[in-house]
Amino acid sequence: MSDPVLKKARCPICKGESAVDYKPFCSRRCADVDLNRWLSESYRIPTSERSVDSADDDEIL
Ligand SMILES: [Zn+2]
Image 1: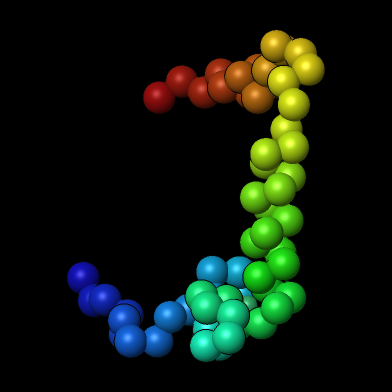
Image 2: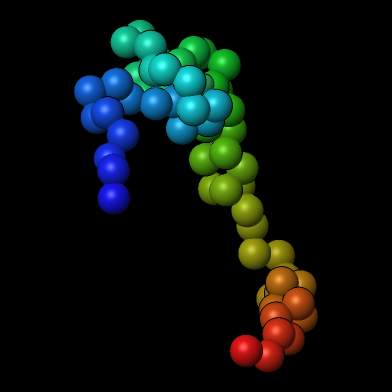
């Protein structure tokens, strides 16, 4: 196992070098992208209890 250099944080969005002003992101744009992800997740309203995802879970190991 080889750890990447921990001194330099990486932008979780584009894996670029993070900027001090936008830590841990590299730019305002990537910070916005991350923010939008959070917002869209919190906006998820449980309107129906149907889960379409489980229908795809048929794989036999
Ligand atoms: Zn970035």
